[in-house]
Length: 212
Image: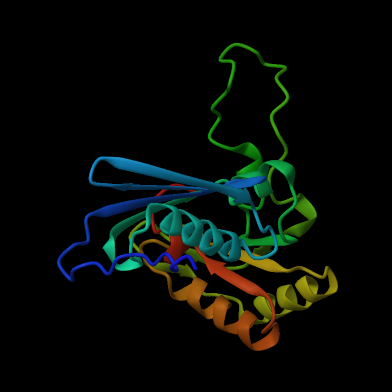
C-alpha cells in the first residue's frame, strides 16, 4: 500500500518562499518560488467569487511543491478584474455627486489629448453618464474654508433621485475636499441613512489630492 504523501512541516523561522497571484478575466495564475525553484498553477477564474479560485490555485501549487503553507513569507497579488470591468462597462450602476457647477468636469477632462493635434479625436465616454452625475450646493476653497455651506436638503433630494435611478454605488467628489472633508462625510452619512444598501465612496478617503 502506498504511503500518503505529506508536505513537510516548515520551521517557524523558514518563511523564505514567495507567492505571486494574478487574477485574470479567464485564468487565475499562481507562481511559487522557494530556494531557487519555481512552481506554477493555472486554473479558471471563479468570476463570481475570485477568492475561491485563488485559494484553489494556491493549494495546488503548495501541494506540487510539497511545502507547508507556513513557508510562504511574501504574497504579491494583482488582478485585471477591476480594469476589465471599467473597459467593458460591466461594473455597478455608479453615480457621481459633486460640487454644483462642476458636474461636467469629468467630461471636460484635463484637456489632455491622445493625439496632440487631432482636434476631431473621439475620446472614450466618461465612466459616469451625465444623467447619473448629481451636483449638490456646497463649496470649500483651496485652504479648506467653507464658502457655501452644504445644502443638506439638496443632498437628501439627491438621495431620492439615486433611489429612483436604481443606482448601486455612489462616488462623492467635492471640490477641495482634500483640505476639508466635512461636506463629503456629511453627505456620506446622509446616504448611509437613506440608502443603506448602496456602496458609497468618498474622494477624501480614497484619494485626498488636489485638482478637480
